[in-house]
Length: 181
Image 1 (cartoon, rainbow, N blue to C red):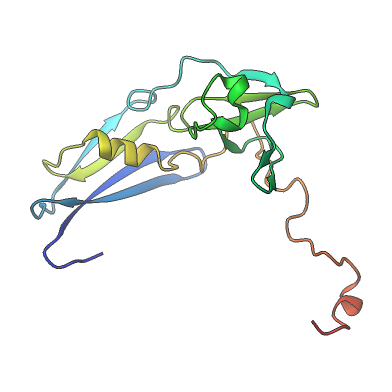
Image 2 (image 1 turned 135 degrees about the horizontal axis):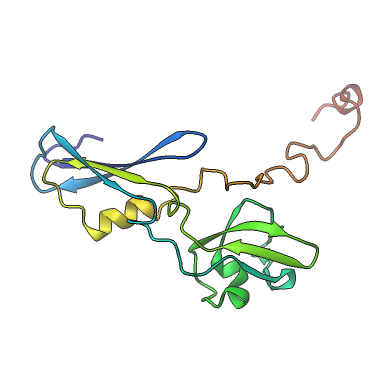
């Protein structure tokens, strides 16, 4: 990441889930070379990334838009989706890409958690000493996927509703490989 004449600042967002210590980094150009010293700021859970005031929302399954371009999206528990996929139910724009996590499903309903995935965790930001933590840096650290790696408490994420590595021709291997492709 070295470019002649360009200085960079590294910002790190650190948080601990029940399964790992996570570190998300963001590099930005600096007008002058930064010092090697760093400082850290710690925020309590919900202090820097506030939980939304909305409790989980349960809505009719029919309000989840399953067709996107040529893809069919099947809602799976524990996964994140853009709020636009349920814009009528969540009262948002069809172009709203803020995530929601699906936390429950029945044959007729879906339940979405609209809280930011980092809201439940204490956060620590490590930055070059005297480097300003601008709104752009804050947004970059928190709105580029941080927090989406951690499992939802008490929910098993449905990664494999069907086996993902199946092949179109499920005959026994000897038959499958008998014909050259």
